[in-house]
Length: 156
Image (cartoon, rainbow, N blue to C red; front, side, top):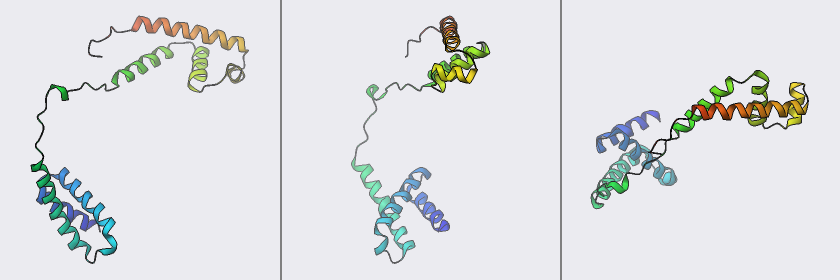
């Protein structure tokens, strides 16, 4: 069966002249063959004929539809989320500078979503100590992140 798939792809490449278009063509033919499978006597012959027909249909469709000329309206700026990774890395770098207990409180509270009581049990301290560590850690994070802020870019 794998040999048949390779052979189908080779035929499709010969018909389309493009490997990615050939892969799409083979996929379309295999989908159609799946639906028609009970009626197919010779799958290899059917696949060959279906490849030829599907290739001709694609060629006809492409030439019937005029290609739309791209204009500036098609050039839409898409946000790539790279700045979110930069922000995360900056926050993690600042968290690494916190004292051990404050780092632990921040991790347990905001990453593990534990309550103050659960954090107190985990760190063997009082709830008040957890609250004070949280407040100090957040104040330090805010201050250091404000110092590190890069001016906003105009393309955002």
